[in-house]
Amino acid sequence: MRSLPHELQFNIFAQLELGDLLNCRVATRDWYQVTTTLLFKDPDPWRLDRLLSTLRRSRQWRIDARSRDAESKKGVVGEDILSCYPGHHVKTLRLGPLKGFKSRIDNTFVNDFTRCLSFDGSITHLVWLDLSDCYLVNDTAFIHLISSSPYLVHLNVSGWSGLSDTAIKHIGECTRLRTLILGVIFENCRAVGDAVRGSRRTLEVFCVDSGVDWVCGKIVLDEMALTTLSVARIPMCNDGLEKVLRCGRLRELCLTKQESLPCLARLGEWCTKLVSVNLAQTKFPPSTLASLKTCRSTLQSLNLSFCSNVTDADLEPLVRDLPYLLSFKVDGCMLLTDAPIITLLHHSPLLTDLHFKSTNITSTTFNAIVNAHCANQLVHLSVKHCVGIHADTLLTPELARLSRLESLDVSGLDLTHVHVEVLARALPRLRVLRIVGCDGVSIEFAREFKECNALGEKIALVDVYGV
Image (cartoon, rainbow, N blue to C red; front, side):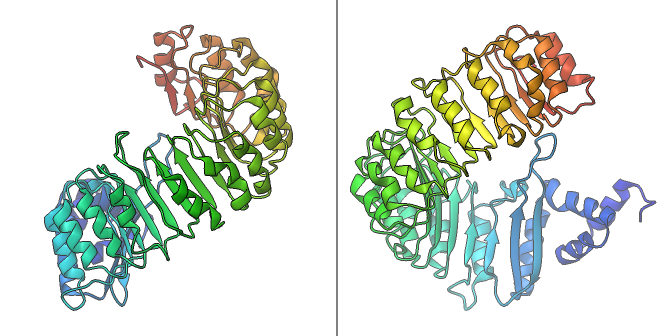
């Protein structure tokens, strides 16, 4: 087989059934590459038809389509993995990661799948259901699938635009849900409250994003022992949020674009084991940050981007005691100066991700970054539109201490082609360099740098307008 042309191998494997194709995929490395292309990169629709026919012939199969989201050097999403192996019933159905199938996953396909998976003609034994981005499925097919799946534990319907409030309310029939991810355009927040009604005693992970900023009403949550709560662009009822916080089980909290929520003043008092906190574009009481000191031994990620009310006085007490912090983002916090950032760098040696877009930090902070204990740990750094940073600061020999930096955003700084070349040579692992709006870097130089990189093409992306 190895001596045959690739096209001929492709045509041979195309004649196989789905099960045989999957078995060949694990035989050798060469066969793996050919069958992977056939299964996931070729848009022909016959694969879904064969998948359904396989289910009709035998219900003793389990279908599990997972996705490797690791990015390759050129930023291309890795291949999806489809594994079929014997099981008592079909319990896992993940169609969301199958990006090449989206034009085929419609109402007819979902209804056929529901009939194939039904054990006694009425219910399925689905436990895990991922239909993210399956935008061709409407209310009728979705409601039928939900009504036929009483054992669901995980449900992901993010990225949809076709579901109405009526369909979302039917999710409330699922009384065993532990994970619910909604990312759909709905009109009224009351539907979201109805969606969690049936599983409020079992739900642990709840994520919702309306996709728009004009949703009516507020989300009203009952007392639920959630470990993860993520609500974006949807107003929340303060009393309902307080009930969730008082349970004290939260590990991850994401509240973006929220109005004033007084209960956040005691966030750290009620939730002492928070790992990730994202309050981007949210108005919170000044005492919120001070209360997070109780999470010093667990907090790893803090995002305060575009929180215009955050000042040095609010942040200084907290950053003195975050030894395990990995990610820190304060994009757009115009009231911050160098002082709390330098304090953070002295007390957080494990930092890997720093974002200071459109802040008032100066060259003093940048010098502190390259000389900090965490310098050789940093992977992502953004100083976009930080006009207080002088371009020549980037020419310091200490820049080589950022030995693991993979992504650097210096857009808006007064850079020239000399600075770009110095950055490329000094940072051995740099893969993404963003220089949007750097007028000193000509379009011709950027284009030549991308096409004929004299540094061995080690930088995968040079992001600049016009190239």
